[in-house]
Amino acid sequence: MSNAIRLIIFSLSTLLISCNQTKKQKLIDDKILRSKLSDSINKLSDKPAFKVDAKVKTLILDYNAISCSCAQWSESKSNKKEYYWLEPANEQLINADHLFNGRNLPIQIKVTGQIVSENGFPKQNTLSKVGENEAGKVFRYTNIEVLKK
Image 1 (spheres, helix red, strand yellow):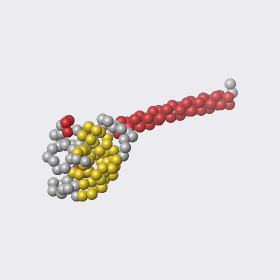
Image 2 (image 1 turned 90 degrees about the horizontal axis):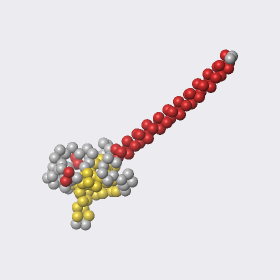
Image 3 (image 1 turned 90 degrees about the vertical axis):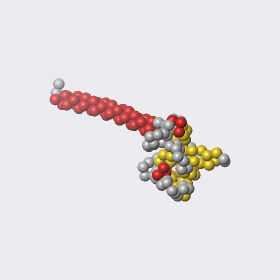
Image 4 (image 1 turned 135 degrees about the vertical axis):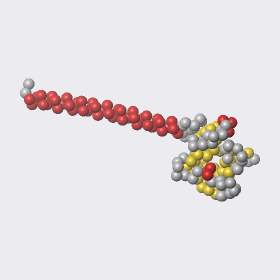
């Protein structure tokens, strides 16, 4: 076999192997991407009753300075108060739980976001004395406006 034919066969073999490895790499990359996407969805949905398509709401909430380690924010509807744990969607947002300094009542805020749990706690909850019976609605907000402070 001549050197030219050997060179052509070698070149074609290398090309086929290279193309096949590119396809394998693409499959691996696609698997990694799907895995990362799945992880992101799992992080969002780690709360019980989380609905990915949950309706975005705007709530006007009042701070209730009550001496318990329970949800402190409430929305008044008719003659019934609904209490919420609040969770900022990112670190750039004001943390609503840091607005009360012990003297500045009333505090009222307007928040836009989603209920991420009907019966749970916020992710960054650092309260050590919270019991399971104090679980409540968790509202993750993407926008906050202080109305009264």
